[in-house]
Amino acid sequence: MKDQRREFGSGNLVVALYAIFALSATVRASYQIFRKFEEAPLAYSLSLIAGLVYILASISLVRRNFELAKWTIYFELTGVIVVGFLSIVLPSIFAHPTVWSYFGIGYGFIPLLLPIFGLWWLRRANR
Image 1 (cartoon, rainbow, N blue to C red):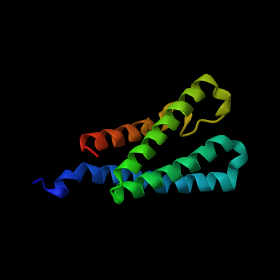
Image 2 (cartoon, one colour):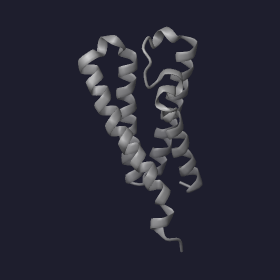
Image 3 (spheres, rainbow, N blue to C red):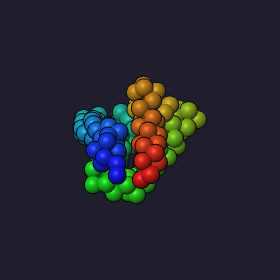
């Protein structure tokens, strides 16, 4: 029988990353919406949605509801890909560089890599 702590070890990293992103994205988006929404309303609204998605992913991972986590992360990845392509095809949508521009290039592609890492872990752990 496998040691449950060891089996979920890399899962703790996934949970920690999602929790950090949940907190940072929600706080950042709240500030942006209340202080400078008119500068980039679409980008700031998407950041708030991303924060809520990160919260849902964090909670579902902590509660070990891996099916909900998987679909939440698929939703996140789809959103990042769609918005990333839109920022390339229609750059006027994102007049200022944001976390969403060009798949998160200004943030080290973390918005694109985090869901890929999360889905990889869920698949590797047979979740």
